[in-house]
Image (cartoon, rainbow, N blue to C red; front, side, top):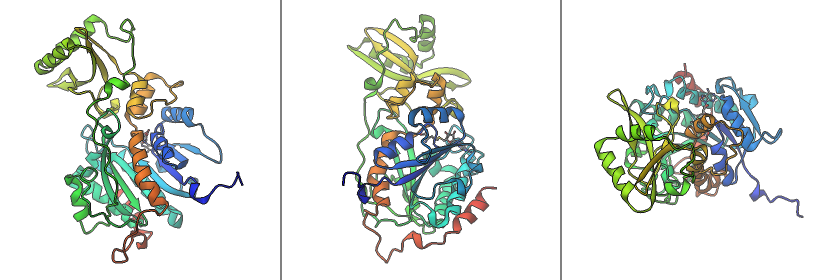
Length: 402
Ligand SMILES: C[S@@+](CC[C@H](N)C(=O)[O-])C[C@H]1O[C@@H](n2cnc3c(N)ncnc32)[C@H](O)[C@@H]1O
């Protein structure tokens, strides 16, 4: 009897579009999913992904290449979930705001193309993850277009905003569209922690097929914890900046920041803060966060510099770049295999990624119960989106992605 696997314990398969270094996979696996196929076009990310997970023929494939070149026949046919962390470049404030028509963020439409082609083998649940800028891009038209495309494929859509800061000492707000072929009954709860006021218009738009799943309240945002993830780097380590560079750092701070930092420096004990380099009126300056939380990790492509760690205490101020291990910890992947990754490769990979505990929370409380049909279904008075046509998505894709 020992080798009989009960049906309830089978691990539903998931597709991972825009897989990067696989942090969506880490979160999905923690909640019981099995990622069978992943795609990304950056060889450096694939190298980190395969160092972490390895490719196991028959069990898992990492398809390296442009999603625009993926064909329906390349996909496994048994997936219950498709996860897509599509590029945010054209949606974030740092980008040109071309939105879902942009060269990079527009690659989302290839996911729609592939889901369209899967027809009746389409996963029961789909997730689109992106920056919260998706909700406001082109006055909400991009979010409407994405929901409409999912609707056309037979999915009702729920839209949630979750900040990694609820789980980790990093501010990283993100938007999650959860598409369900069999949507659950709507919750009467407002759930403002997940569906804030600025998202409510989505549920009021009668041209969209949406639902609001009953979900537990997520943990409250953290107010500290950076000090716990910082690596203990000895003060004589060469990674701490020398005196001249440290003085230039302090000199670039605004007067308010300088006095705040000076107070922390004199206070008893040791504290850590993170700092970003920004350009103000054409001049590069440093800004130190006031709290015990890291700013959102980003990549140079997003127009931001790497993040620095500032150590304050014993009347001294020391600065160094944040290490790859600290990036990993701030993304909830503290034991990620970094053995083969160059520093910038790792920082780029983590700066682009999704925070693991956010994916895990969503997968545990929402995606897995949806896939397993454990959420109370809609009443017949509220017909499920699954009854919609399977072909509507291709029309949306064709008109939006030219
Ligand atoms: C926001 S990141 C997603 C990261 C991923 N969730 C992770 O945890 O590492 C978007 C990813 O899309 C990839 N990408 C962008 N355009 C692509 C395309 N046309 N085809 C395949 N991958 C693409 C980038 O290399 C990047 O890794």
